[in-house]
Length: 245
Image 1 (cartoon, helix red, strand yellow):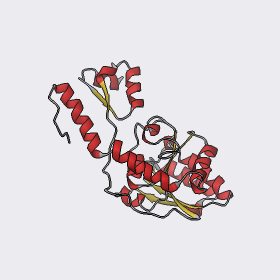
Image 2 (cartoon, helix red, strand yellow):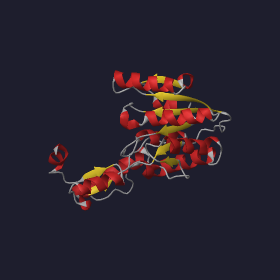
Image 3 (cartoon, rainbow, N blue to C red):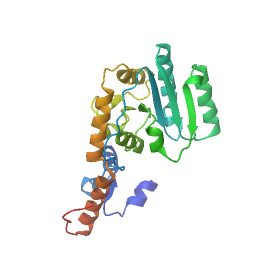
Image 4 (cartoon, rainbow, N blue to C red):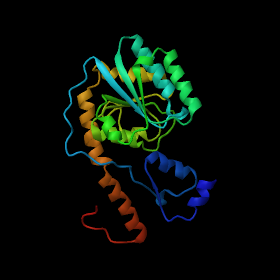
């Protein structure tokens, strides 16, 4: 109700994904008044060279940890993979929503036998510095994420992504092309998705290169700025510039 009231008089809406555009349409807003401008992050001039991991994997999850982020599902998936002999460290980067939830999750990790496999880093200022240490980013969200910035940041850094196929995520990465998509809330599906990379069934090197290229083309800071500028020109009825920023 508050959302609809606050947007009642706007000249135009900008959403960061097609899924959010469809949501706003479902709330009664005309598609003609909605423009999709994808989130963007800075691009790297070249993809850093990195060898494919051999034997041991550094897996990352970056979030404000709360139930909707699906960290429980990830821990269950990793417990299965550990039982199957996989060698890994999970780097959990970010704060918890509250202390009770933090205790619950850390107790779950211990009960699953993952105490020695998880590093709890807490909040960090420089996410990019953490990404370059990872072999894989996992996004186990249970619900739609709009267009997750952490996925775009991983793509820009050349870190392959395994993510749940919730609203928005599939607009950034396509299964088997720029990343791996799995069913939300399903530890077995998530474990299988991670295994596709660790066993080489999907090329780790191929994924990181394709993701880096797609981020440059569609999800850069410059493409986002150009998209927003185009909406403003349309609304203000300004002539288009020859070389928009």
